[in-house]
Image (cartoon, rainbow, N blue to C red; front, top):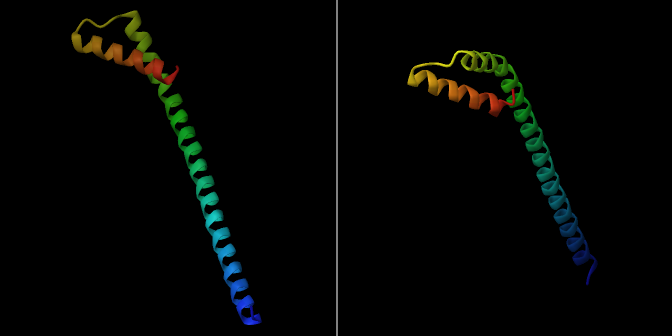
Length: 89
């Protein structure tokens, strides 16, 4: 092999390694950002559920003390009880 051919192969190899390094770093960066976004969304969801707990607990306690008489009221009471369990109140 001539010196020129060695230089060409060296340049191509270095270019390939740099391109692969950039691709790997892009994937790692994207995964890190996605994980952060997922954690933030879970945190917002928990905070939202916590805020609703006061209202749901009050309504569920009221429905347990004086059960509704109408079919619609009974359905609402059942749904509120389910929400209380779902939110972990």
